[in-house]
Amino acid sequence: MKIAIGADHGGYRLKEILVPFIESLGHEVEDVGCSCEQSVDYPDYSLPVCEMVTGGKAERGVLICGTGIGMSIAANKFPGIRCALVHDLFSAKATREHNDTNVLSMGERVIGPGVAQEIIRTWLETPFSNGERHIGRLNKVAQIEQKYNLHP
Ligand code: RB5
Image (cartoon, rainbow, N blue to C red; front, side, top):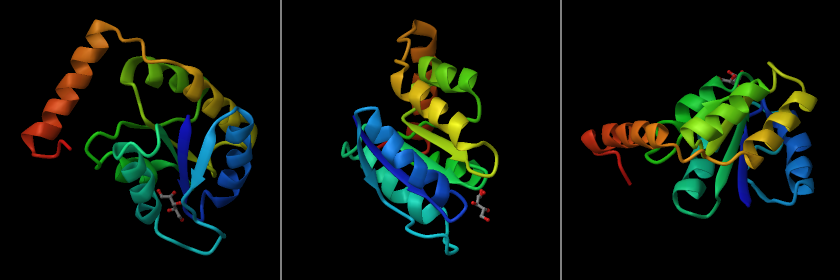
């Protein structure tokens, strides 16, 4: 898969570890920055990642900031983006099976690189269940976007 990845200064070091890890899993990675630990604003990095996913230029997105919270809030403003903030393996699997998430957010100040790598591996490898009840719920989420004219 093509994976877009972005981080702010709070997630920069973890991003630098995750890029080669994702590539080692056989995926192509497009890194939108940031490129050092100088203070930046997380929405400036969620934007290009989410635009790549909704525009079909990447199949999935990965976002990292200090907590993962800011990135996940910003990402979920984008129509068509389903972003999960994940810090454990159970959620990594469940959010693919139940929510068909296309963007993953993590916090460098919350988890270590070993856990982050296993979360990424699980999240990338787990398919959506295609369960009827989950599809119905995701359709209701899409209806909220449509109601407020947010659907792409
Ligand atoms: C930056 O200090 C920090 O606020 C940011 O990385 C993120 O945690 C925001 O949610």
